[in-house]
Image (cartoon, rainbow, N blue to C red; front, side, top):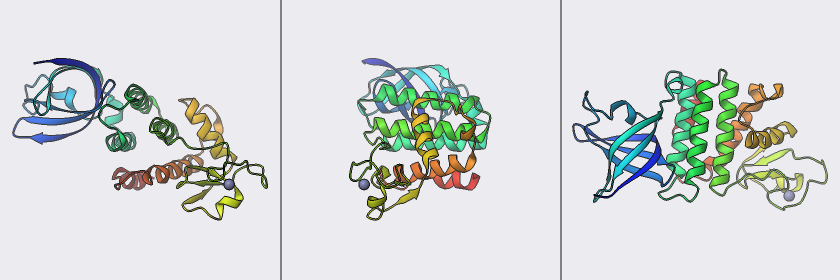
Length: 252
Ligand SMILES: [Zn+2]
C-alpha cells in the first residue's frame, strides 16, 4: 500500500463505528485531507490525544481505496493553552471553521495556509489579552483572504478604482465589494461600514506584523469593529452560514 508523509492540523472529526474516527485535517502539502484514524476511541490507542481537534502532527498516511488511513502521528504542537480558555478556544474554532469551509483538497497555497493557521494558534496560545487574540484573528482573516484571492482593497476605491478626492481619506468599507469605497461610490454600495484612518492602518499593520505593537491597537472598540467588518466581508464570500460567529458574539 503506498504511503505519504505530511504535516497537518486537525480541524474536526466524525465518529466511524465503535472505535474509529474520520479526521478532517488541513495539511501543508495537500490542503484538506480526510483520513480514517483506526481504534482512536479506545483508551489504549496510540493515536488518541494526537487526533484531538486543534492539534498539529507529522503524519504517515497509507493510501486507501476510499479513505486514506493514519498509520503514525508524531505530535508537533498540542496548543493546550488554546483548548483551556473559552475565549481563545472560540476564536480558534472560528479559524478552523473558516479553513474547513474555504480550504480545498490540493490547495495551491496549502503551505502558506497551513503556516498561517499554525502561527495563529501559536500566537493565540501565548497571547494574554483579548485584544491580542483579536489581533491574531484579524491577521488570520486578512491573510487567508489574500491566499483565497479575495485580498481587501485598502489603497483605492474598490468600486471605481480612483483615489478619494473629496475627503482625502476613506470613511467607508464595503464588505460586499471587498475594500474601501470613496464618498461617491458609498451611495451606490451595500453592506458598508463607517471606518476611519485607524481601521485602514490596522488592516495594513495586521497584514504585516503578528503582534499589535502600538498602544492604539489595544482599543477593544477598534478591534471589535474591525473584526465585525471582516466577519461580514468573509460571510459574504461563503455559500453557507458559519456557526462560530454566533458563539463569539455571546463572548463579546
Ligand atoms: Zn469610488
